[in-house]
Amino acid sequence: MTEAKKLYVKTFGCQMNVYDSERMAEALVTQGYEQVDTADDADMILFNTCHIREKAAEKMYSDLGRLKPLHDAKPALKIAVAGCVAQAEGEEILRRQPMVDLVVGPQTYHRLPAMMQAVGRGERVLDTDFPEEDKFTLLPKDRRPARGPAAFLTVQEGCDKFCSFCVVPYTRGAEVSRPADRLLGEARDLVARGVREITLLGQNVNAYHGAGLDGGEWGLARLVRELARIDGLERIRYTTSHPNDMEDDLIAAHGDCEKLMPYLHLPVQSGSDRILKAMNRKHTAESYIRLIERIRAVRPDLVLSGDFIVGFPGETEADFQATLDLVERVGYGAAYSFKYSARPGTPAAERAGVDPAQADARLQRLQTLITAQQRATQEGMIGRVVKVLFEKPGRKEGQISGKSEYLHAVHCDGPATLLGQIALVEIIATQSNSLTGRLYAQP
Ligand code: 5AD
Ligand code: SF4
Image (cartoon, rainbow, N blue to C red; front, side, top):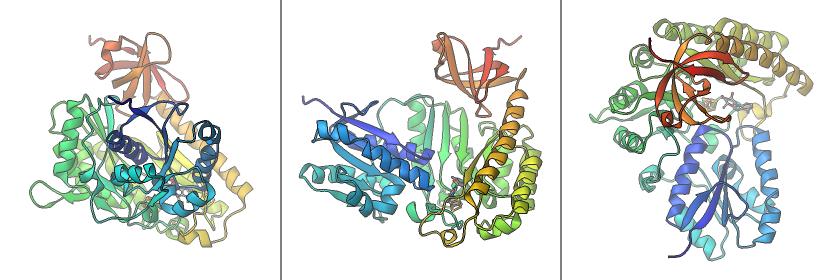
């Protein structure tokens, strides 16, 4: 038997990329590759890249440059670039970086085995099509053991919203939903491989409208309810959502579907209606707040998270103040905030940006407020008994760590036999990004 070749995969960006990386690694098994954890003695290195902000894309180029010594030491090393930078800048990557053998976009990686054969013949390959065929139906079934009890499942890809700052509609393409039978099948397979929690992924996941089992079209709520019937699947989450796609049945599911976890990532981007309009968001600050009230009415303990962009072209101090006001009113358990980054090809990139120093200062102010809210939410957990799905050994000897239903990282002393299982934990302390607890014995 020939020895397996070593594949090292580095993933940048969002959870969809994490999912895609696993699928690509699986597709390369057919070419004799097995995945390893370090680049050092790899035969192939694959970067799965992110194009959402300039910094993310630049990081990819600098990390790529740093592979030179490895490539010099082993000229047969194959280097592949996948994902959204590949989609957006494929030709440029090949031009800028002669070491790269293969560039593949997010919609064509099912063709990787054939591409690798071309690479083996000494060709440099570029494939950034948006093909008719569905890559997911053509990819091999993943038969490797699950990497842990929490897994991702891509149910929808692409976006038709065209927010004026965002590259996603161009790099990932139009919205496409996968059929429910495939998803239910994949979920059952994951559960059979030890998975207890599935996070449904999509750039616009709550716009899911896939073919249902009954011949009709199913929305996300229906899909969640069907998934909830799978024995052994204990938890369901979904991300990322758009406020305008939070339909009544999905809100209702937050109230009555026990397996749907009380954590929701619902980006708003700005609290200023003027800026929201310029962003082409098609909702207002007030409509977002009303929506949150409706979700909290059915699930009062919901922990909410969001995304914000500061320094969007034309943002004034008053606009920014409106964002701070919205954050104050909503109360987030966690949130991500970014300085606006002009992306080539998007409508907003044509507009004059705000002074970078001012944008930096605003980002700082927003992050201070968000951090305070996050801390308050975490402190509010102290004394509460939560359910933790233990995923891995903790950093300290004898500790295990996992996630609560609210997506807080929790660690506590406990036996390794609890890994992969859900147990009650009483929260006793909070650190900046995690909680400490102790196993709770029911009285
Ligand atoms: N600049 C800064 N942040 C951006 N995001 C998307 N595009 C940009 C951009 N051009 C942020 C949004 C989105 C998150 C994934 O990234 O907040 O919700
Ligand atoms: Fe980008 Fe999300 Fe807007 Fe779609 S909804 S364009 S993915 S920010």
